[in-house]
Length: 74
Image (cartoon, rainbow, N blue to C red; front, side, top):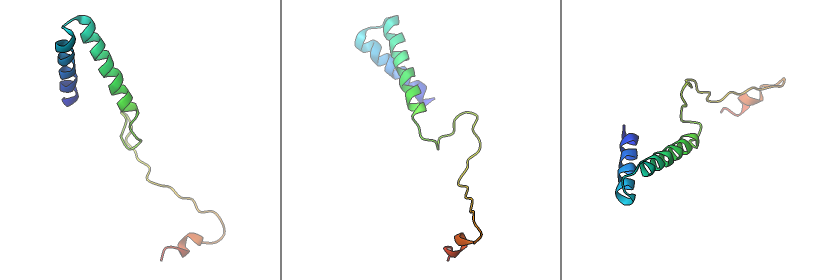
């Protein structure tokens, strides 16, 4: 809801600044959409995208004949 209010305030400010025309409204909405898309796609991997539900914390595989990884647990 807050992003919609911010986009509305941006469009209203652009209309006050440049005059209310369909070009100003359309261009402002286009710029806000492109900026929002860039911000959404630029987020790091910790943010869940739609459809993602699982998280892999860390997976380790130890290979070899000794239990070397247990030596450093103390």
